[in-house]
Image 1 (cartoon, rainbow, N blue to C red):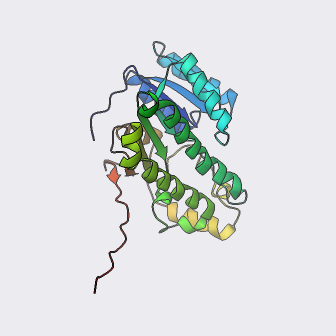
Image 2 (cartoon, helix red, strand yellow):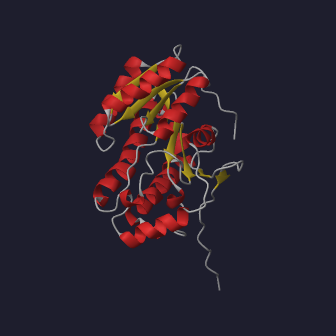
Image 3 (cartoon, rainbow, N blue to C red):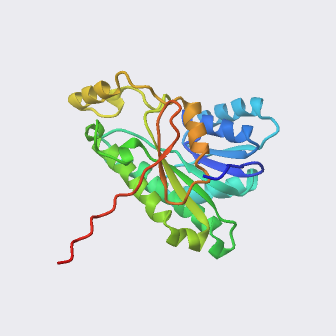
Length: 267
């Protein structure tokens, strides 16, 4: 991976009011970039903006309400970013939800929301259309690269994150990157210690599935928001289409190879 420079650049983050969004925005601002945070709660966005402005008064920090499920909302958010902070050349798709009962909404936010984010960035940044090119980073999950472990306990969430990985590998393929100049990569973090984790009952209503999640998590170290943010930041300039496993501790991100189908024997 090449050294990451964001000085003078604008980074747009969906899910920007959450714990990971705050930590990543803080890091970008520390490294000389500007940020534009999008989320569903205007009150939470204001709190985050106030906190960041106290620490980074010399940087530009913008916010807007965004429902990632709707294309028009994405276009409005992009326009607001351009008008208030500048043209974003880095988009981080963080917004996501959990819960197995309302699985259709899980797909709408976790899959459709990411797809629309990629589409919006490409439409505005593609060099085919005179744009500057750019970077899209998708937040997948370890649930998005395997079904081993406790992944079976949350079918909808696991499937949605697998789809994020697939969107990354396809939109990030050199076929599209060479046409648009927009790189698409992803990270697959293990649990991050943010309020998003909540209680296991928030992940699934099935009591036995909750016990499986609890048992699997016992004794494991979780990523801190700051550690996760630094590891994500360091893959901004990674190869388009790559997916990076992120775990706590000193372990660097690991590039997860895509599965290759076995070649049939020619008789």
